[in-house]
Image (cartoon, rainbow, N blue to C red; front, top):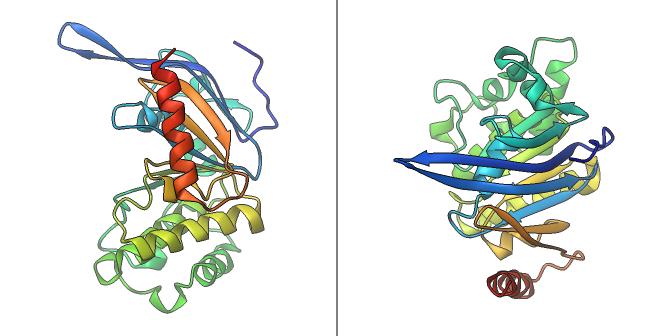
Length: 252
């Protein structure tokens, strides 16, 4: 393994993960590496079973890896016990899931506050986050009274309230209609361009991945290819490059 770069928000070095299925061992990840620069938006693409969600869960410290290393903001996740990892995750990792995972009995505002500890500036931070997301007039609404797009905005605000080193998004548009999905992608892109956020997003949709700076392609748990989007919002071109990567991988 190489020496981790402590200046990077994320440095994944040759990680592997296996699962038992009966008597067989299935390799979900095989020597996968991924580095993300500050202010970079990376999309991970792959078919179902390619390992992309497993990779995201390993980055988030939700599963242990069998080999290799996951380093967040200069800290190797393997050094933490369960309690310390939970505290570190709360400070340095923002996680957004397809299913939103909001607390149904709490208002939008209280869901956003949930990961943060009380501080003198928290009210201002919550107000600014709600304003940035266009949710100020919905702050007292509970999740059931919010649209899917609004719930996902609240989930993003909750993930960012502690100003984490990196935001992880697992199929964040998967439960949204096309218009809400596009608005969400525009929001993530603006957070990178205007705030210098670092984002890693799992998706299988070219029209979602096109908002990223770089696309990493996984197949059968392995790094297959990666390419820059060059700022082009062209899902057909990106889809072609993605499928060319898969075809080239089949020929290896």
